[in-house]
Length: 424
Ligand SMILES: [Zn+2]
Image (tube, rainbow, N blue to C red; front, side, top):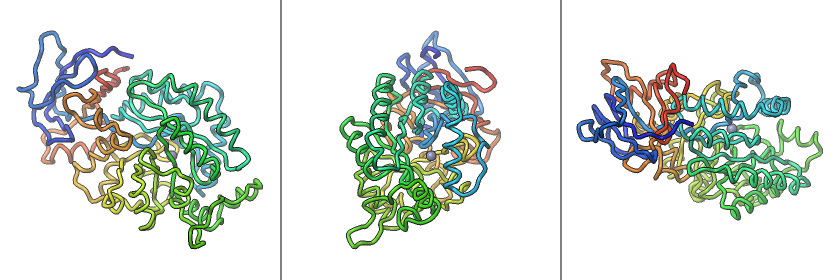
């Protein structure tokens, strides 16, 4: 990892996100990796001996926050054909099972490099290899890495929990001030009710944040609500009992959100990934439980899951960020595309869309004091994005129209971790 050195950055525009864009802006990042000053270039100190990097026709903005990744699957873009979602999920599991030892370590490291190259400095990542937390920590990245656990058979709870607890014990010591550990009981079609309850208890006891894939596909709703469809058939074929605790107070079967709430999983430290298949009661429940949501519009569209009720969730006050999902689903880590897609669904301004990929993302895991915006004391997580010149658009519109190829440089807590055309 490159050492942190005090550095001054200037560009035609600085977008602090939490305050209006600054023309001819600058920032000074200190030896501790945190921002000392940000503002108009004339007002930001230029201490002797401190390198002054001038980016010219570019915007400096906070490193992006990708609210949902599976970096251990890096390199598998295009590996699974589209099709029925339950078969797709199974195909991903089968491909993972064929990877040799050591493969996931290399994939995780490449995934972190790919994230930096795409302007992403914070990831909320789920996976079961245990390789992403060390890869993120050693590279100086930020985020929460949720250790996945599976187990649809209620008789499997002790075994699944023993595996999870061992992995958490192994990974705990690898956390840094920036890269933290969480747990993720995967999804209602791969985890039994008793296992969800055991993981929720464990997470509360150990003060670990939680992530769940929830209300993603119509197939999941068919399974949870009606015990029908491809997931139900797969469970029956394995001799697994239907989900327990199905019936609500009036005897009606419950939605995936209501069912998961019944397992004690939903709360302020829970990240709900996808949440596409929601009715008005689900939205109220997510807001009441103060969960955070990772919205993945491009992945949802690719899989044909439909569109999430983004505007209604935001009106209800649900914290929301945007995520790419895995490269198997979407091909690349293009958070610019996610912000544009979310903008259309949320009906927000360009500035609002950029906030979804920065400060709003940081809020999902309580990191908004440290990252997701540029201000005195926040981490020097900064990217330089090319701006065409001349350009009639606002700098926010121009940045939002960009993509990973426009990212010229990435700094993570002041360390240069990516420069286009150079090895980091
Ligand atoms: Zn996912």
